[in-house]
Amino acid sequence: MKNLISGIKTAGVVATAAMTLNSCEQKNTTNNDVQEAMYKVDSVANIRPEYKNTINAIALYKAQIQVYKDANKNMLKCYAQDYIKRNIKDVRLRKFLSLAMDEQILMEVSGFDMNESVYDFIDLDSCYVAKMRFFRRNQRWYDDLVVYLVDGYTEKQLLNSDFFKTINNPEMKQTFEYNTKQIERLKSVVDAASKRENRIYDDLWQQYVNHNQKVR
Image (cartoon, rainbow, N blue to C red):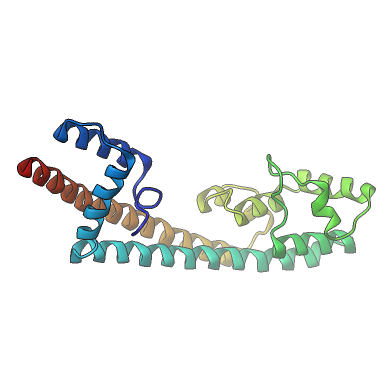
C-alpha cells in the first residue's frame, strides 16, 4: 500500500487515528490497528475519482514547478560561467569556481562553508585553499548563487541578494522573475489541491469511524 504515514500523511495522523479508534471502540489501539484502518481508508480513497484526480494534479503541478526551478538554475549558471570567464583572471580560481557550480560540491559543512575534501577534489595546496575561502567570503554574489543552487535560498531570497547586483543583466533577471512568478502561482495551486486532498481523506476517515460505531 502507499505509505501514507511517512508520505502524504504525517505522524500526527497516526496519533489522531489512534485516539479516534480508542474513543469509538473503547479499547487500546495498537499501531497495527491504526495501519490497518488507514489501509482500508486509503484503499477506498484510491478508487475515488476526485481523490485520484487531485493526487495526479498535485504531481503534475509539482513537476511543472521543478521545470521552472531547473530552468532558473541552468540559466544562472550559464551567466555566472560567462562572468567568471570574463572577470576572473586566476586560472586555478576560475577552474574551481566553474567546476564547483557544475558538480555542486560546495555545501559540505554547516554554515555554507567548505571543508578540505572539496578542495582535494581539484588538488589544491593549503595556501591556495585560503585564497579560495577568502574569495567566497568576499564575493557574496557567488556564495548567493551556490546557496540557491543547493536550495538554500528561495527564488525571492536570491532576487534580494548580491547576485543580481553583480551579474547585472536585465534580460536574465526578467526571465528569472517571470519563472519565479510561475513557481509561486503553481505553489498556491498545489497548496489548494493539497488541502482538498486532505479534506477528502478526512471525510473518508470519518465515514470509516462512523461505520465502525454502527456495527459494534
